Each structure stands twice: as C-alpha cells, then as structure tokens.
Image (cartoon, rainbow, N blue to C red; front, top):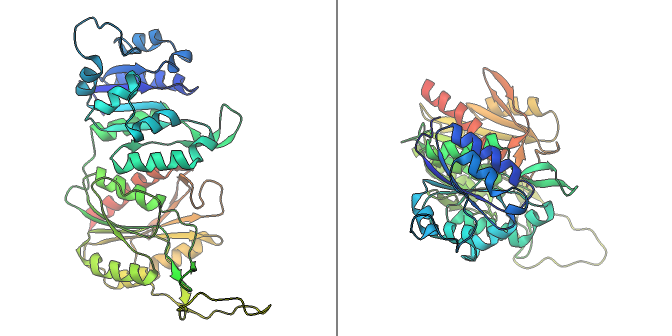
Length: 401
C-alpha cells in the first residue's frame, strides 16, 4: 500500500521495545509517509532523538517547553497535522495517562489534543499487562475508539514469558496501512457476529458458564466494521467494550442467544458464530438459593439447550454466508467436519482449546479453516489477525454466491 503524503505522529515511550520503533519509522518513511516522532524523557534513555531524526528527516520532539524553529504551539500543531497517531511502544504509564486524560509531558499532551485516529502497540511486563488497572484502562480506551495491536506472547526482556511483547514492526505498519488505506471490501455488507459465553441459571446465586472471553468474536466485529461492514454483535457477558461503530446486543442464556439470532439472521449477509453457548441447562432453576442438605450430594437434572447453529442453518437464505466455530479438545477435524455439514455452514473455524496460545482468554489463536473444498491451518496469530484471515475467506465465499 502507498502511504505517500500521509502525516503520522509516532509516540515513543520508555521501554526496551523503543528500538523497534526505529524500524517502524524506517518502514513508514519508505512507504512515503511523513513521520513526526514524539519521545518521552524515558524513551530517550533507550534510543537517542538523533536516531529518529535521521530516519524520519524531521526533528524529534522531546520537550514541551523547547523553543520551536517556527513559532507555533507545537503540541497543538502536531495534533492537528496527524492523519494517524501511533504510540509504539505504549507503556502501562501512557495508557493510564490517556485513560485518565492526564497531560504532563509532550506526548501525553499531544495525544490528548489530537482528533486523529489513534493506534497503540503496548509493551510491558506480563504482570503489568494483566494488572486489573491496566485491563480497565485498555477497555476504557477501546470504548473511545482507540485501536490496539498486540501485545504478543513470548519471552520478554525481563526474563518472564507471557503476554507483553510489542508486535513486530511489520505487523504495526500493516495495521497502519489498514487504517489509512482501508480495505472496504465489506462496504454495504450486513455482518452478524456472536461472541462470549452464556450463563445458565441454577438458582438466584449460581449459574453454569464456560471460559470464553469473547475476544475472538469482538476482534471479528472490529475487523468487519473497519472493512466497511454494518456490524451487529450479539454478546454474552464479557468485560470487553464494543468496538466503535458496532451495534451490540447483550444476552445471558443460550435461549436468549437463540431468540436474538433467529430474529436477526434473516437480515444478515454474513453470520459468524464465535460465541460459546451452553449445550445443557438446568431442567428447572430453583427460586431460592440451594442450601446444603447434610453431607449428601446435590443432584441436578439437565436438558439440552436449543441448537442455535442448527436453527440458523435451517433458515439460511440464498446468498447468505454462515461461518461457525468448533472449539474442541479432541478429534478436532472430525468433530468440525461433522458440524460443517450438519449445521449447513459454508465454513467452520476449528481449534484445539487445549493447545498453548489457542485456548480461552488469550490474545492469540491457532485455527483451521474448513470448507467443503478443503482445510487450511494457520500458525499461532493474534486474534485480530485471525479475524482478518477469516473475513478474507468469508468475502470470497460471498462473492461466489
């Protein structure tokens, strides 16, 4: 893609991943973009401003009170100039400042003033990334339309292994290109996505659920919206904020999901079922909290829930594309293949949830796309990238219809 003439403000914060921002700058410059680097004081401890000035051919801004060569309020000028504001690496500190509206240095002041789209590439210790405060800040920023890429899992500079490694420069530049030169191959397409778990009530206190986080479905909804689709997201209980521009419909039980889907599917062009509904629900929920009865066991009677995917498949209309998910623990391809035919799907996305990097509540996935024409397995990828791979295949099927 060609970024000729695009104005990109690149914020660099203090972390060892700051060296990767040099390659981001170089790649953007080669693609034709004008890159203006804003560095925090701590970032200058890892990479010198001169490095970025040489790569970008623009002064690196580090000091709110430095005298500019031409008179202008520099943080405002940069904020207005930006077609896109990128922060890579983005530390927990800058995420917290952005979430709270704190502006106490050049970078936080400029990003608060900008009205350009914002993309952040987090990089930090796993414990910091998983901390409740950081998670809340991330969801707050997502609800305001800030876009995220990564972090990835792996070996970190601190010696830990886990989520927190900044995405590679190539991935970041690809994400920038998708924002500034978006593929609008879903323009005018109505996409219905399901995500998250369901809750099956036992009594007023307890319910049955599963470990689905909703991250895969939310990534699909976000990707489809960015590619021009009109997106409705039917979501079970999650802690995730709906992507900007996406209509969210909240449900609790599998019965709720069934009713929401059967009502909305006829209007959708593409239906992607990434939710994890329960297969069973209590025969009857107790009106009061169930108490212990001595030392005896508790016996609950269960019945099957409605088969949502099968119901959607039965009412499938001509030209509609149906995509399902098969989260399995054994015989993955055999089980997925049976679902593909029984549920009248065009494609099913199969994964082994016991595999490292592909289970519940992680930011990556390892999937196999299965159609009547064959199967294709992808390596471990961020769920956002898996979402685009899925949509690439779904739009090809849609065009064939």
